[in-house]
Image 1: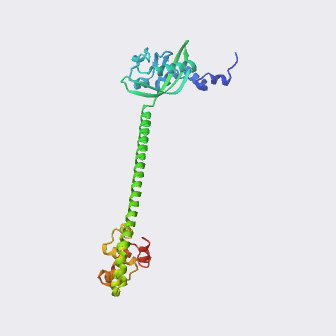
Image 2: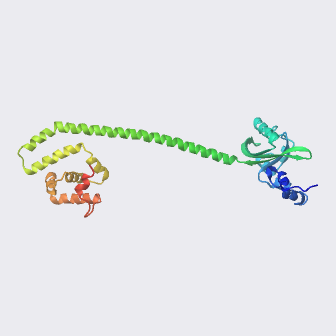
Image 3: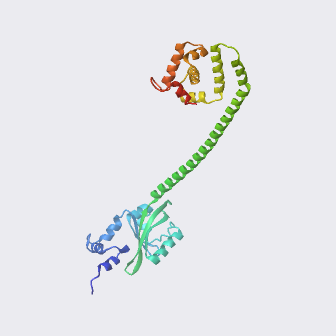
Length: 303
């Protein structure tokens, strides 16, 4: 009798694994019991040995703990008779084993004794014992993992739906803002047109008449302020610097128009010192400081 080659030994085990050492342990190790019964009993995964038609011949502790059945309730019973498998699923497994003799990590669903649905990864191998074909199967319960995956998928779907709604709201808001801006431009254009047609002619007549120099300054300020009604300057100024007082906004507007402190004092009916105090407050609140940018240049940039 010739000695078996290494390839012959490897071919003897499931999945092409060299099981010669395991066979020696099973035959000589752990006293009289052998290695396989010990591994079968201690395995944290569910393990069972069934006949080809699904009758339980042996189950381990993990199998009983997960299914809720005792060993005595399972042995001799058929998995189909317990009514916990879907018929088409069980038949698919039997058909696969009859042709391929092994299954690896097939996702299956079954119910335990209480009716709770479980999801497991099934691996099975057809073995022969004393002339009888048996099925050695291992089941890894992944129910919790599947639940977490389902919850994660639902969360992702929910977030995606919220993102779509938010994008739709943003689009609608942009349309409204664009429409508001367009309406504002139209209103400003109408106001400018009305001022030029209804007010400007009378201002021009006043300017052509005789008046004191300071009155002419007041008239110039009046004309400028009328034009500013239709501009965005005061709105932008108040938006950028909400802590400005009404008097400071008035001074800022006159400074923008190029009026001197003396002219501003005359128009507002205040002292020169008061005007200078307002100018200093404007520089401080706008962060210009001493030696900073020119106040009028800064204001003109806000048009």
